[in-house]
Image (cartoon, rainbow, N blue to C red):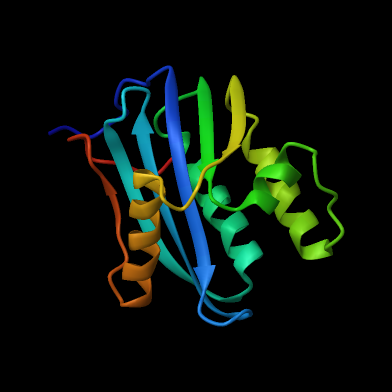
Length: 157
């Protein structure tokens, strides 16, 4: 394997999940990135400290978009089981909470490198969301990961 940028793909799918134990409570995130054909490219999980469920969902989306820049400048399809986050990102729900508004604006900034970013709500029964959920629960158990799954080594952005 060699270091350096892999060939970018036209489209990636981003699956994110965030949660906390207690609300608020200790939080963690899980991120899964796959190419347009469903091949997993990257997975990430980490503990994020004291937070709420909604903030954890946004933090997962923020980390996921940041990681997507390693793979594409094209289309990013973001899939999330948080209806609130998806509807706020799509302009369907108001941003009444100052902390969520700040996280929303961070997501908006992270969209800039990409040609197109879309947000879609999916159920917790989606296999990729289940995997993101497993990743965040692994983080709670001390098994945090940040790894490429496509055979390339990753350097910082």
